[in-house]
Image (cartoon, rainbow, N blue to C red; front, side, top):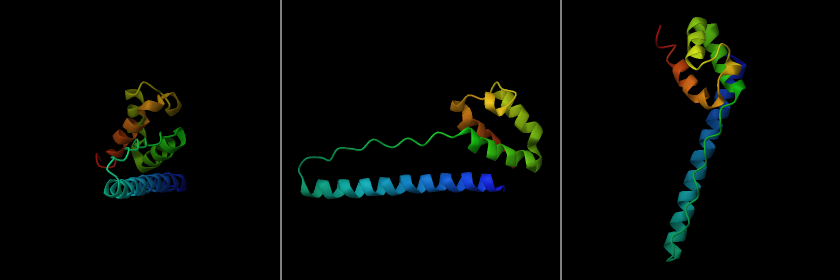
Length: 107
């Protein structure tokens, strides 16, 4: 894996861990509020997963390309209506990465 890909993966793992810790803290706070008060505690809104950035997607696709999946990546980009990554709509980044993940298993 490249350093950028490792860094992107580490950042994503840290964000996931932070979300899990926040959920646990909210659950504990709710348990203590419910035990001491007759009123139910207000439910915090679940935090949205941060949007993927162009750089994060580029790092993953570059890794896949170096692993010999360049043609498959071009096909994926075309699937999302683009000839290059910068033309892909950011709302499709997550789906694009899901599609790219299976490339290693498809060989």
